[in-house]
Image (cartoon, rainbow, N blue to C red; front, side):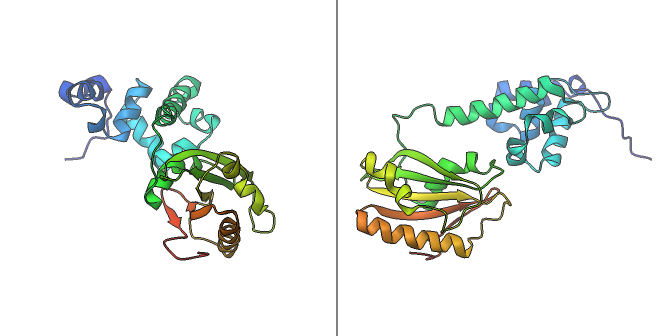
Length: 232
């Protein structure tokens, strides 16, 4: 028997399997990314329900990170999406980011490269140009804030080492962690990354400010130069 390629509307799904009903019963954590997107999209198009459309968007943009990185125009131009649905998706992504930053009084502590990466990876992985940021930490390794310094192609000759520590001195930070992204998605450190790390570590010793790590952020991955003993 030839398999049917006919699609169905979301209302044709068994009630217990519909995304909104499953969310109400089991919580949002039980839903797949495609189902959560389907709830945002609300309706699909002929031959494709909202969940299927959500799955298509995830495939087109290579997952949530790609959808996060995509511009509003790129999302809105996808078949069946349009400006309204694209706005809903982008608004939901931004709300998630703002929720993560909503309570600055609860300063997260950094005890590992993974802790530090969690503070910047969501935002940095979406950047289409190279950026260099400095995470400021107190004596208990609590995150005081992030200084966003450089944008564009980075190399050790263009970065003013003193600028890396300006905010740390102003805010009496005890330590810093450098973080920059590779828009290519590959977090493998370059020779320039290592040279910059080495120069920053040496300057930090003179200023009595520890450079705890230098993270290179890629697409869903990161590399700790400290863990690899590169520049330290």
